[in-house]
Length: 206
Image (cartoon, rainbow, N blue to C red; front, top):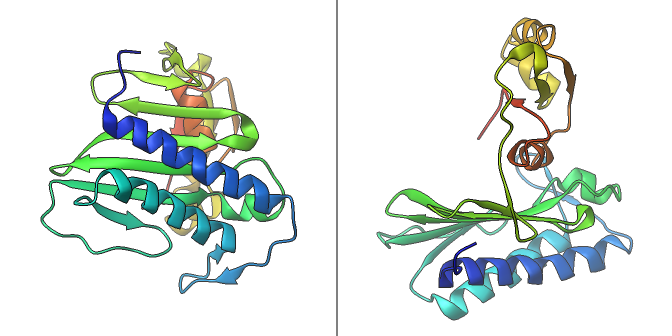
């Protein structure tokens, strides 16, 4: 890609620092606590978020940072970083490889870059506005499939479709495509960005 901006360079550095922490803790025995929303959180989540914040603050002390675990104070700052140290904590706790660190930078209310690092899968995907999307340094593109009967579908948590009474709509879509699976979490978006699947269906985006 063209030269990485100073913002993307720092985001990638932060993701790599989080990676070292996540891989270290996953090799051992982890205990999880429950947050108010009943989702799990581990020491790996909190330490990785601290490492990401420290890396960003060192280079951009005036920028706001909003984290999954510690929150953050949002001011009228021009730049806001949004981070999730582990997307897929339940997978992480079970020793599964489907977990990733997510980092985004918002400028004046619009996302200008994003990093999604899945170290156990060996996938570091990043994008910067106007510069394309890359996986491990190689340019990637979404699928060119245009017909449903040639498409491959991935969908999110099935219980969310049920809660929103969208199960029948999902089944109708599934019956029209070539194949389908539930890869879930960030992973289906990695696959989508690489053109390995053609459609992602979600019922509970937040």
